Image 1 (cartoon, rainbow, N blue to C red):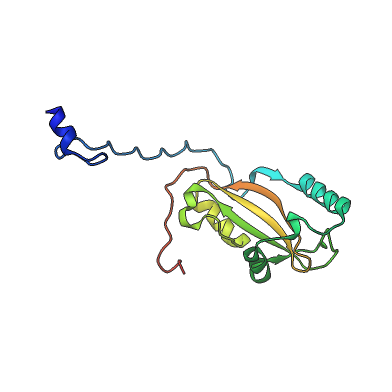
Image 2 (cartoon, helix red, strand yellow; image 1 turned 120 degrees about the vertical axis):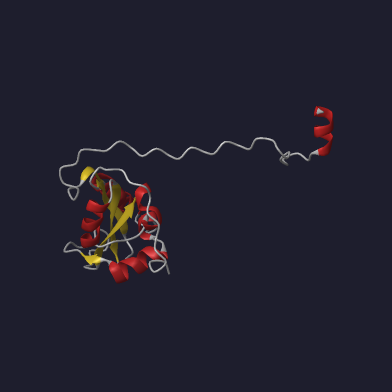
Length: 171
């Protein structure tokens, strides 16, 4: 019988009546986290030392060519239309065109991960989601300097399944 089955099947095909693969287990949700205020940043990572180091490298090379001066066009477009103006001047060109962008990341966000949001939208999201990361990026519209200023976690600590974008949210 084994010889007959081996001759009559093609590698990778399923023999009728044979048991299929067991279903993959669903990923487990993380344990709830005790969070006093879901809008208060926690696990903050400040990138000011790397920023100072990147500026030092630019000054040392004095070529103007740097990964911090060659941003993706989408980042420049987001900065132009959605950036929040900063009071401080650009650390590279001393221009006044510095803006701040906030991007959100997390498994719970589903299709909403990787999008840029305003501070008010992020405050709303903090009470709707268990945990997500916010990256703050500064961008200069004049010389194209850009740098991730800091990263932090928000949310109420109660894990939830990933959300899917509604048809009206997608473009």
